[in-house]
Length: 231
Image (cartoon, rainbow, N blue to C red; front, side, top):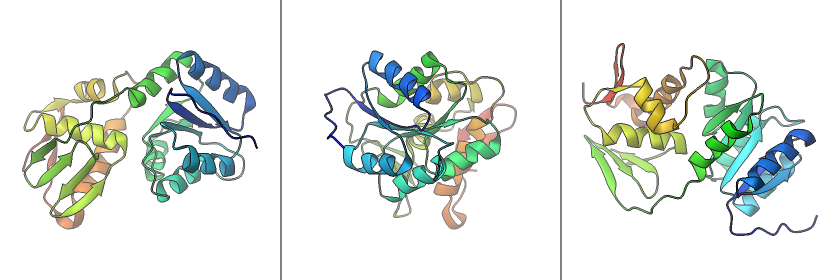
């Protein structure tokens, strides 16, 4: 295989076995100013995720052989913290939980829609200023430069979306935040139809920051949304 030569535009690794969809994704990404690299199977996808260190990895959940979920899990288990998007056909709670369990940051629903997909890609690849600041609330610390949380001396690894959600909550302590505000400020786009994606991510954040009986900091405000406060 010839070596892949990347320019200075952000590299997006596409793990897609459907050649027509892979071509459509590649063309749209090129037109948007990104450098797409297509992996036709999971073995090549895993190798390129490790070697190329792309800015973003897009994985189809339905792949021949190893599933997209298994590939995401392998990439995360290798120590990589690259943002990962899963292309999925279903939008059930089980689908969303499976994505998070595998280490994916977010998912994109089929059928493929160019502008919606690119909008989601831009959210993950927009440049951010390097910051050494920390957000503090009670005994919870969020390091904005490493994207890690700390509580009672332990380090908590977060996916990009978990980090963005926790940062938003910690930037508005004790302020009840509606689901609409959270969607607008964390996801930056509207979901199609009804979705309880926020509840799924809140659940995972709670599991990570409430280790072994630590007091709850993310409280549910019935009929409104959520608030960061001590009970």
